[in-house]
Length: 506
Image 1 (cartoon, helix red, strand yellow):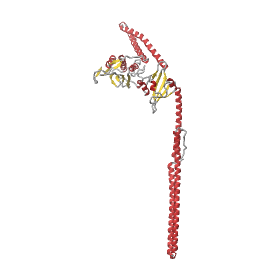
Image 2 (cartoon, helix red, strand yellow):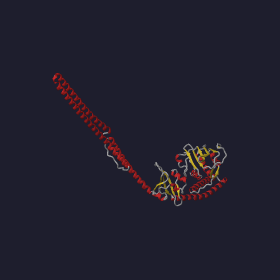
Image 3 (tube, rainbow, N blue to C red):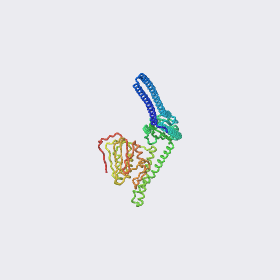
Image 4 (cartoon, one colour):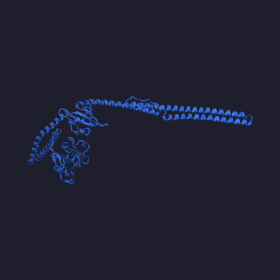
């Protein structure tokens, strides 16, 4: 196992300190020994001079010789000590140079390999060596490079599969950048939309086919429905989804729905024809049943009951056929309106008045609250009255006896808001998602099931949108429901004060 960087530094410092200490001990020891020998020889010379005065000259000469010898020995020892010190420093420098090299080499290899990896060479690897820290860093780098290479390979495989999938799709796929310019298109898109070349703004492509607001909603990912392009034999449907990338953008799906459009037109024509043809005999049956009811005194109780059942079911079938006709006309684009400037208060009051009897029959309280000085709305009164009666009828049927139903009309940010609220059982989130779909009927409770075709709300929404308005609902289980009709307003000409209200409650 490789030594750590800290241990290598400790070893280097220990070797350097040991060498310097040894040189210092040897040098100082030699100097001390020379001094000690010189002092001992000098003392002996003086002792001999005292014991033999005649040898004074000889001893003086000897001491001079000793001084010269000590000086020479001290000089040699100092030189040797300096040489050893230089050798120790050179040795320490060599040790630290090798230590730095053992660190620098693997780090330089890591830097070089990282540069290669950044430039796209995913095969770049480093040899593991040096201190344990750099060795561990090298192992981690190699593992990262292996994982990166594996991830890149998987991404390339996914890209290839996606490319093959897009190439083989029968639906066209067009990608747009944040500004709405075409950046790519698969073969199906180039076949279905041959004018949609890369670099072309999508607004220019669709400007002559759909309105600008629909294009803006499409690019913003806020267009919940398909946009249909063309008519007759060539009909395209476009849906959009926002890309989740940081740079933004949109992906468009283009589908050829010519066959589906033909089938839908055939279906609408069949429903229109069948409904129209069935309504005439049903109207005759209803008329004869009503004539029989006028002569009920001549009928037995059993016959009267039978005629009432015939009349009730005939009326139900007529209402159902009328609803089907309205939906078929709406789908076929044949449902038209003739809007006129209309006061809101009489319109709402008339709808409430028509439902008063049904509400009283179930001991329900029907309240009306209309804000004064409301602006007029441009609508076909009978159609909006049909919508309001349908909403009130739903509230009447779904609420229990003794419930309260409120109808309010007030100014809103987008026009006039007419709301029908109740304190009934409410609508579950699962039903709320499909409440405006056709043939959908909600549950009024655990034991009560409301009759009906499930077409009323679908027709109401279609009629309101035909007037340029909107219909939505707020509801929660056990907290009642509120349906809001928003109608575009025209400038009001009423002279009532803004604080006055018309209030009817019973």
